[in-house]
Length: 229
Image (cartoon, rainbow, N blue to C red):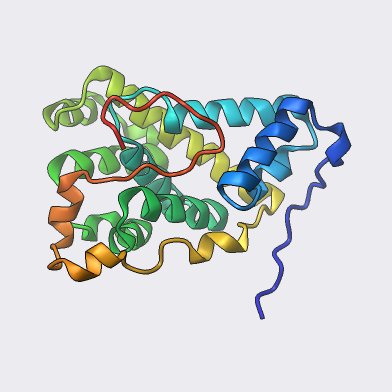
């Protein structure tokens, strides 16, 4: 029997104190995801903080960017792996499995992205995000130059840094407030899709390089990334 996770050490405010737009957002989460992510409930003691968190997260992960949505989830997972963030590794690991339609790749990124056989672009992206997480004082022009050589624009580099920075903050807040992941995350996209089983197995490195990614349900509609998923 799975132990019901503790939501957070900080008690969220009662439902009747939530502003109508937040209540509607939670309703969309229930409709599209089947549950309200615990991180939102943890922020629900303060409408302003919750709205700021949602707006920032949605803009970074779903808004216009030269980074695909799959690549942004890769950054979230790689950063959370370094920080050993139970909540974000579980929730964004599930999102990466879902967006990439590749449980194997999602698991490897969560464990050690260097073993995933990534193409040059994505390897450079995660190398930068990892260095920014572990030794931000050692970031220098050579690190940005490596990203440009891998095909990233200066705006892309900003987006890589913004996503990495956001999840470093989120990892620390999850640890401080003892936010536990919804149990549902553990079971999402753990099996191969029927089409994948029927088709010849493609090496992980080729799947990673292909950039394939399906659309997934979002709690709120946003503009598509310029690189699709």
